[in-house]
Image 1 (cartoon, rainbow, N blue to C red):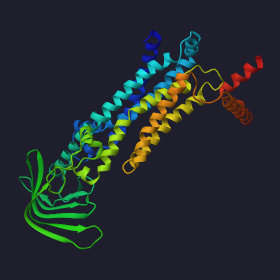
Image 2 (cartoon, rainbow, N blue to C red):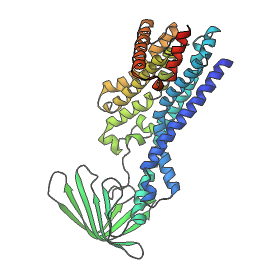
Image 3 (spheres, one colour):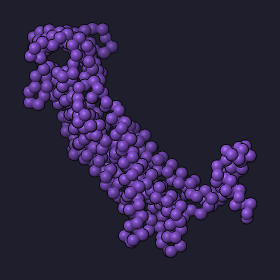
Image 4 (cartoon, rainbow, N blue to C red):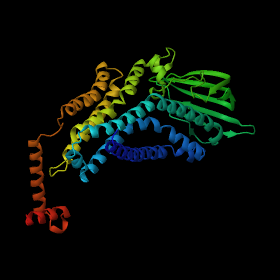
Length: 407
């Protein structure tokens, strides 16, 4: 890179880090508010709270980075235009490639970061978060349970005990499990005891029964037992402890070579295919963002609007491609057309602007359309001037009137 290109690259990287840091901070705060009950109601310390709120950030950061890149590019170009640096570059004979190269370098860094998050860090952090939450729910029964009170240990799982005896023995245990789409399970036992074996927690119930109520019926089946081990680590109702992934937790290696015995793959194999295309197409949005911005507003702005219309259109084009792709992600589970469009949208955002840049043309409004917009803006400002008293008018309007009077 030349000295000029290194200067633009440095400005863009600083703007990217600031915008990405701000957006990630907002996301972290939202997650922190959502998980505050970990400290308030589940008896966990601040270290556990911080770990839980941080583990979900990598997956969300992958979606945030292209937005942060868009903000950074717009901010840098606005500064270059306001300081007349783009005009000087253009007058000195610098081509649009002098702007494209540093922007593309930043875009490639964002692209590599998105793929790292999508293919490795994101799934790993979500899987760790899931294991972490499972352990918290398991410990909830032994640590945070209150005598004579109903306590939720996750969606659709409720515990109640009458009392706690010395040695950790729980009396009159009741467990309600409504997580299954097929049936509701109720566990009732005279007593129970929390035990751990091979890094897994079990609630061993004594002298009780399991009541099963299939959804849509009023027939209850009852199975009595003298001893029953309820697996708390997986919260699976005493199964093997091996539960299915969600699509966000699936390691990328398993997307490429699925395990036929995995529960989610057996039940919904289409989610594997959809998640594969979501992860591998996500990085293309960074390149599309760079090329759209350079093709539409990567030149000196000299008209009265100062490039506001072009910047708005460029931002809308980038956001439209991203929103369209997100909307297609759910449809991709059942539609080959949706999968194809997930790739087509960002590729169109790459190819068309690249052709305009290569030909030396500008992608955006024609001069006639720009003149019409400027004329309409002028009419709107004049109408507002007549409607508002001078003390309420922006100072820029009054400065413009003074300048016209002198000329």
